[in-house]
Image (cartoon, rainbow, N blue to C red; front, side, top):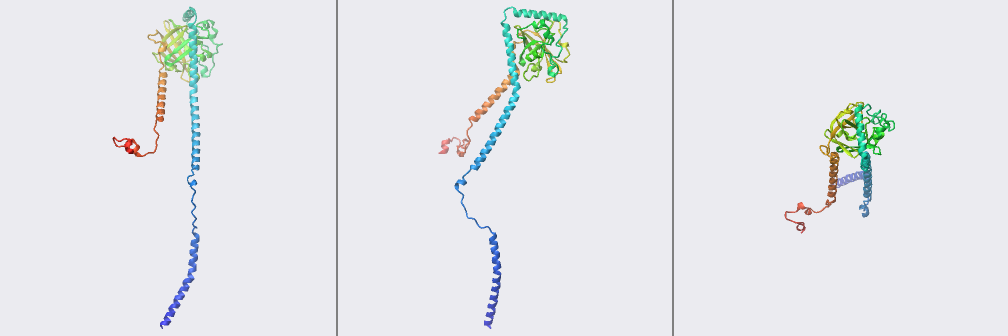
Length: 377
């Protein structure tokens, strides 16, 4: 019995092993499939050291960025220079115009000073006689037939040949210095220094200021009223542009035939172009009025700066003693700007280079009373 039991047990064990062996091939194929799905390990290939330390691509990118930066800087500088040039171009024209006009007045004064005695005095005497006759006549003609400022408004203008002043030979012969200049009008506080000519034709006003025909010649004396006109707002020249800055109590001057006449502003008014009531002679007065167009750029009215004769040097100071406050402020501003730029340049030039170093080297890291050599030791 025991033998039969062992045989049956052995038979069952053999059968179970056969069943297990029958399942094993399937498991093996599954494992093979899993193994085939896994990536095969690649062999380690060391990167050459030259490639590791190669930064040529970074250098190329840096150079490209630097080129772009320089291109942007150049474009910015060019645009900035162009903007400054456009802004400064009218200023340059005005500066050159002022210089030429001042040279004209200086040349005229020098020429008159070189005349033999009594040539200048004779011309002054003739001008005063003309003024006396004009005051007695009641000024039947006052100004040109065409508004001297009409050209600035796009209207017609009086030429030198067809103007009323040009046709009056007696008028043209008076205060004639030989180059067409009658004298000089100066408003030192506004840096106005212009020669003035006979009449108010466009040619005269383009060369400086003009004497309004029909008003007294600017030689002073009782019962005289001279009117000097000038353009305002021209791109190429200042002329009377700053005349609106004049205040009551300011002074202006007329230089004619070697004499300097001072006037104190006592009346500022705005009139219509056809209003001549404030341009007439007032008996007993010695007056000069400066006239220009207003408002600025519109030119629909006329600005009158009028003053009465005063003595020099009291109360009117010498013309060279009156300073232009705007020029002083401009000079001070430019000086401060130049000083600031110089300080910035000096600070950058002497600025210590920032380098990486041990904290013990920094002055604030040392103990009190300890020097740099003690720290290193």
